[in-house]
Image (tube, rainbow, N blue to C red; front, side, top):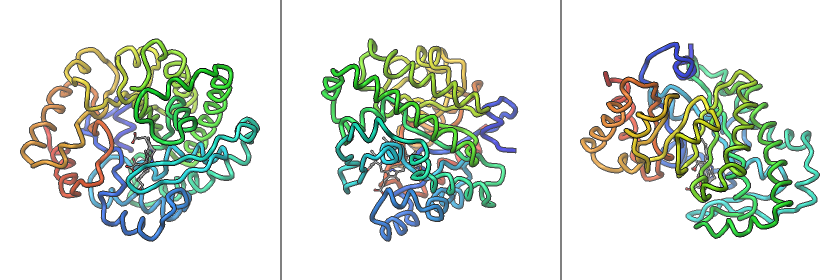
Length: 333
Ligand code: CP3
């Protein structure tokens, strides 16, 4: 029995926890592998290492799920745009070759991402994953569109001005959605039991643009994933109105960021809620962490709630604090 999935389907009432970026730079065992693999995309496409990194946090902590070690930018990569990562800067994408993108073939896309599916299959077979879920993921169409156009993480809302060429953007968005579906479908086929959609840049848009760039495209992915009997967790970071998002997009679980008031969410949203705690609390002292963890658990006590953070674990986090957090949640009653 997988805890998280059964919880989402309302068959159990356990305290559930997993963490965004639970595998990553705060773990010395990840840093060791990373030091020997300077090309991050290649590392994501190494089946054995990707599977190994995916289960690293499960060896240390009693989390209820693993998230496959990969990246949302593998989709632009598989569409033919180069992607690299510069230390202390973030991702750098190459020029968009329109002809190449508009002619992208499913077969070639899947061939490039095949190691991700191989890593999922391998991870599912590991003993550490017994009774645990394996979360697959994609970036939301809007966030992928932004990366493909801006070619790096956006600093501010200026990028919105480059959305003027409506016809081109519409076509690009369609292609992105088509290939995100294909990526979701294959992650499920090889063993992902839940899909999370990361809309890290939802907060850049004004509300009058939500329909076109966030709601409609994401709703399409949610429906598609649900048609494969798989639940979806949506994380529209920085969105203005979580309640409206839930009503329109209809995910199975809504993951909230740390800027929203959890009390307001608990009073206004009826579906399963995930996350919220500011990852910075893992950098402070245990008492302060405990107070804030308890705050979220108390607020969502009579609700369906999956414990997680309001964004990923920060690289300078002490793994002992993560261990303390997981134990706090598991022992809460
Ligand atoms: O959560 C997990 O543990 C699973 C793996 C995962 C990674 N990236 C690994 C990673 C997931 C789910 C992601 C999602 C992702 N990638 C998002 C959405 C979530 C969010 O953070 O908002 C985004 C926007 C990206 C794009 C991306 N990839 C950025 C901006 C960066 C640079 C981050 C930084 O702090 O430098 C990455 C690189 C990346 N992806 C790392 C990891 C572990 C760090 C790589 C390194 O070792 O340098």
